[in-house]
Structures are given as C-alpha cells and as structure tokens.
Length: 85
Image 1 (cartoon, helix red, strand yellow):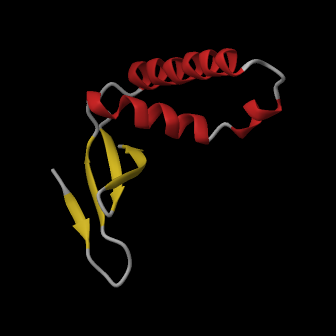
Image 2 (cartoon, rainbow, N blue to C red):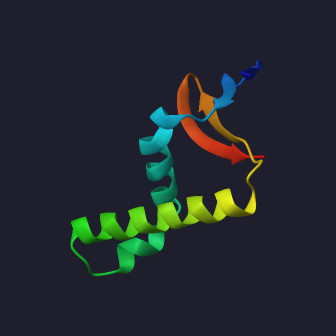
C-alpha cells in the first residue's frame, strides 16, 4: 500500500520494504551510528562490525516483533527512512 502527502512541501510516499532495500537499510543503519568514526580500525573492519550490528538488530526486531511491518519512507521518489509498525 503506497500513501502520499501532497502539500506545499516535498512529495512524501511510503511503501513496503523488500529485498531490494537491503543496501539502503544497511546504509541507513550505519548513518545512525556516528560513534564508529571514533574507533581506530581499518575501513573493512568497520564495515564488518557495522554489518554484524545491523544483522543483530534485525534478528532482535524479528524475534521481538514478528508481526511488524517494515515501511520505506520516500521523498520525491528517493528512500530517506524507514518505519516499523
């Protein structure tokens, strides 16, 4: 189900998350973890650590909220966030 808000501001829509959203969701998760920039590790190790944390969060959410729906928030057709409900 896609919904939209049309006002004088940006065009905001929402759609169900799918397998094609994995890269975006991983990048979104990483963008909320600025503390990783404070750790002195090679970039590949930081990426591995971030992937582990992303997967751990997903597993915890899936186990705790099995009925939750994952929605991608779009602005002008571009993904900008997600909502779990």
